[in-house]
Length: 404
Image (cartoon, rainbow, N blue to C red; front, side, top):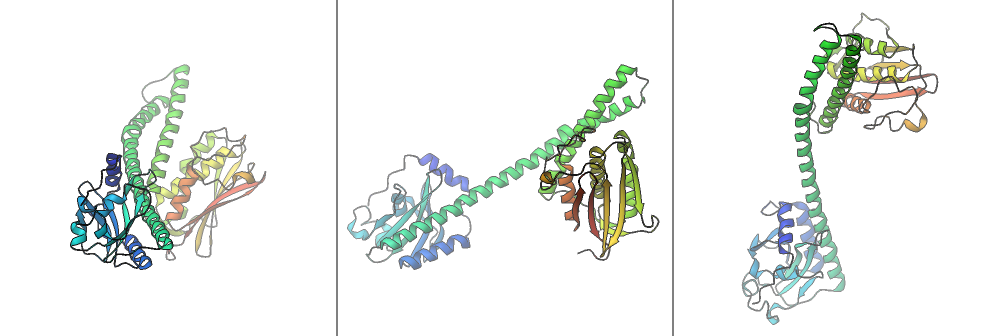
């Protein structure tokens, strides 16, 4: 018996193999289907997905064989990974490398072997898809090609596994980033914002005109930065399904009144008015939802209307009930949304480029966040825009008792 040479890139090859994290894992249907198909096409009792480890070959799939591994020095696959082409032994008893190999003279009595190397995208050969017979024979050109096609499918499964592991790593990194942003940025920003608020509101003594101006600039920019941090945290949590929702039955009329109160000051800064129109402001309209998240959506709608509409415009908030849905609308009478920008309106970090968007800077995340919030509460979100006439953003929520 002659043992196979060690590949020149053995360290890189093993590093790639261990990066997969596949050794000693349970059987998987995807690999078992491929070995079964390989055995059927090549007419052999045994087919394996064999991965060549440092001191052993380990079988991810072992059709027709009970063993899960054998010593590397006995492995036919250790020879197969030294080349790019399918490695074929028609009669092991006539090949000095394998004539007295324990796997040939004993179980499983390997007489015939054909192994297509598993060549990864970086050219590392991790093992083979091989077929094994107990009698001397060969395979046809068509069978050889089919075995190589199936080997490429095994490689695709391995590459997919690597990609999924990378996504898991990125997801973990994102979680760490969210934690870092929350602690290292939001916490001190909140403290700075609070301190500046005390200064601009003369809670710690009167400021002269210059001091008031500088404090005001710092206060507004800190407010904007804190809003950006909060938006980034929200979108990251929404995309990972980790944003908490506190759903309860609530009166959407009361929620809209709160939204008006919370956003009146902002609208005044943008030189716009804000009105609430309900068919009966004292009649409750009940939905199931998270009030704080719905207020967040309303603030996004209202702030966009205030930023993009003309000065002295009146922003209208309305509520109606149709087809077992509560429909909330925010309408402004500005220039509207250009047709070429409508498709990307709910895309992250996209902001409309119009001459009216110069009152207050934004993050480009508000509508994307709003869309996810509404849809996670089984709602519908959208808009209608008529150039130079009006733009209406709306969301619909099922009435309580009609929640899907």
